[in-house]
Image (cartoon, rainbow, N blue to C red; front, side):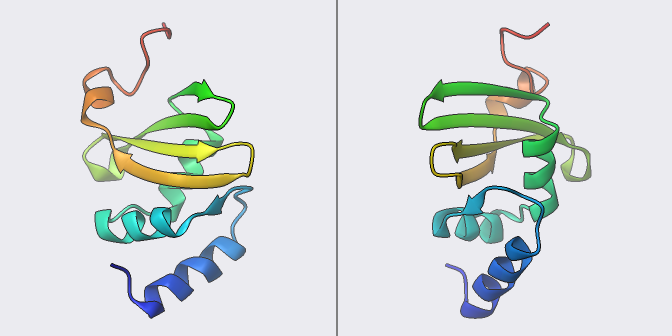
Length: 104
């Protein structure tokens, strides 16, 4: 669980960000607990290695993070309300090179 100082830091950090998405409290908590940097989230949203549209309310962005042992970061967003729902390193996508099956 994030402490108050960390939560304030992330809200200030995101306020000054160029991201058009807002972090949910869950997204803030998992970023802190998993060591996911805001810059990695921004990179996944701006220049993803791949992305998938799951539904009108759910879109997944994937990005290989060189600084984190080339692991594949998955960022789940709700495009209808512009919220980042969660983020985590996806082991299954890493095996695919952070690309979905439909990409060449």
